[in-house]
Amino acid sequence: MKCPACGYVESKVIDSRPAEEYASIRRRRECLECQKRFTTYEVIETIPLMVIKKDQRRESFDRNKLLRGIMKACEKRSVPEEQMKKIASDIELHLQNQLQSEVPSFKIGELVMEHLKDIDEVAYVRFASVYREFKDINTFMNELKSLMMSRRKKKK
Image: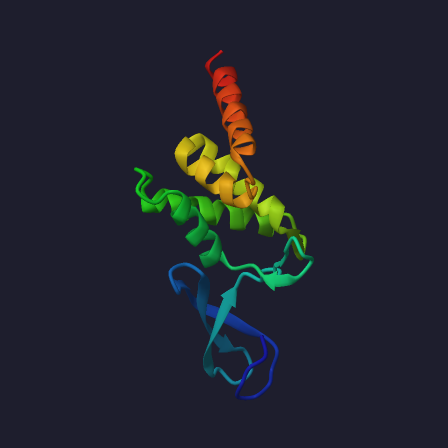
């Protein structure tokens, strides 16, 4: 790390502690040349994630938008807010770990449905009805049948 006082490139870390709710690390350093002390912050570098919409438009991934969709599906259900936030965090982490800069929106929708299916079936069907754009009662019934089949397989 380059000293801001003299420009020397070597320093030693005197103190290190978490900052910003563990999102970064604050380090106190001392220049090995002039002994001036300075502070640096270390943060995890993330890949900016773009979402490819159905109409091929691209927009930045928005965790809050994802969380709003999950909360809307879980509205008036007994799903704790912390669990909804965890779903959003898990999905965001999964997408970041894929190390791809672009992700189709349908993949995000499928990940949400995977999580909701195990937590609350009503929230799952609500989310699926918007996400899959059910056009009529038949597509809705097909989704319900699929859900019931997967439930039977789990019980066996």
